[in-house]
Length: 388
Image 1 (tube, helix red, strand yellow):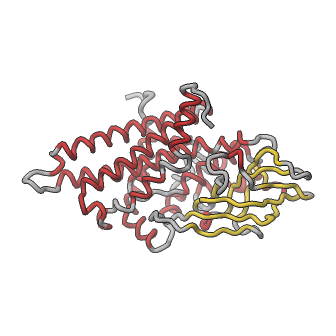
Image 2 (cartoon, helix red, strand yellow; image 1 turned 135 degrees about the vertical axis):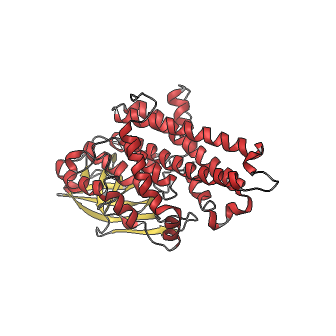
Image 3 (cartoon, one colour; image 1 turned 60 degrees about the horizontal axis):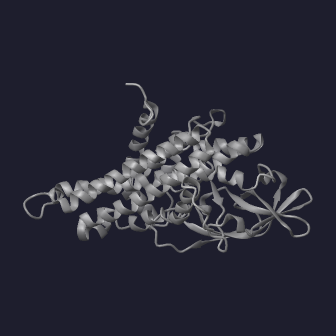
């Protein structure tokens, strides 16, 4: 049977199967135990890196698999579907590795990409600020030149996994000698740089990865901390955001698949009135609707990845936004329905669904809110007047 446009290749199918085997060996119990103990899923990340799964989209010359974002998204989805989602996959090997591959110097590629490929290095991504929200044009974190060095000042908000990363890729605006704010650029900031501090944000989400507020108090950086051009502005930043949305969509569809598996297994076996509860249309039909939502979201995610890997940035931007929206809705709806199928058991720790309520809801907010995606589709797809 030949590969056709709306199916995945044999290679990716085999990749999914191999990743699924590893992910299931760890699973939801391992993930939640680590999270509740305040620990990291270090062993799972390290093994995934050693086996090459984290580096499937890194170019071969830097130790990766030479695949595309679609391959990395498949890896992300399978871990989430096993109940062990790895949030930093959305950030380090996706956003950061992609941007460095496209815009980094050879020295930057040599320094970072092999570590991304084997999982020995992690990098966080930092764009969100308290007073900017979804408006990237209002970023206040600044970079100014001082001799041969850069000086970084400002702060960021809701940045994932900083405590387990070697560096942070920071979006900041250049400021000239007159204090004039210029175009934004990307800076690679080591997490142990003097003047760089961070503090955790208390969250109700059960996850090994934590969220942080970052503070840059005149952090001095060498000239080669700049990634890409000072004149590129948001274009270079957005080059990493399509992969982010594709990965976020896979993260959500994986969570949805995990919840669906739990719900259907329970519905097949739980009996109250002499027949399994899954025979009742009041439960069967909502689950069927969720299944349809999941598959539609997965297909759009695969389309977005294919467009991105083909170098069609504009087209992939539209599809990636749609995929992220559809996947977030599928995850939130499916987790909610899975809990309903379980009744009171849906909120018992034994069944592993209650903790997913907050996690599944995040997709409607981050990395971009559903409202901003609807704004994008209205303006760019439907050609309606801009609302903001």
